[in-house]
Length: 258
Image 1 (tube, rainbow, N blue to C red):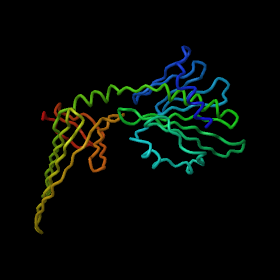
Image 2: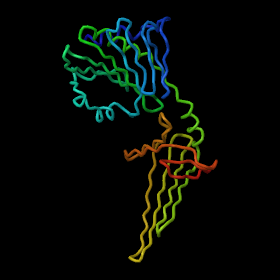
Image 3: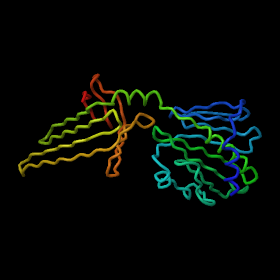
Image 4: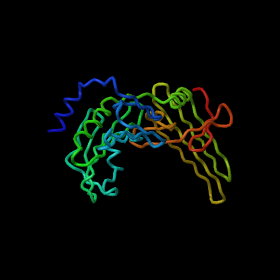
């Protein structure tokens, strides 16, 4: 109940004019008090309270929802234990507190798992001792509340380049041939068709398959296919040698208009 009341008080709190805006290459930014010492590298952002009583770590993640995050999270591996229940921040975002016993007392971690409409999202983790846990929680909550998402320029370019395209993969060798047709619609839908055949002294065979669903470009330049049957396919994207080629997980696909 205490955290619900604190969150309610902060919901309408405006961003302080003294705050500094910090951005992440994955396509999000948030406000951090100007008095905090901020350091950034490829792994994310660390904001340290002026008196060094606690810190807040801001990183990106590639999960689609909190359920998929929870399946991969392993608090016990890092020596933490969940304290209380997972709290609902809004329709998609969640927060929880975990504790770890140390020689000097408990280390508390308040984690906000937030999601971007462009896929993936951010993790905001406040680390403190028991005495400063409430202040650390409030800082992390405010940063989560002030998150803003934009699609990274690289990802926007990939989306523009592949929307409305037919991607074609062809392979033939050693009596085996494979063809894959992937149609990426402008409306975020896709259709896929797979055909493979083989021939040998023992006989020949033919296999066909495919599926459809929705597609999007994930942070970091990855193509994600969400099939209607629940399966998910993720492919790293890279330019091909020719202008009409793209590499999906290193495989060359020809890019054609539908």
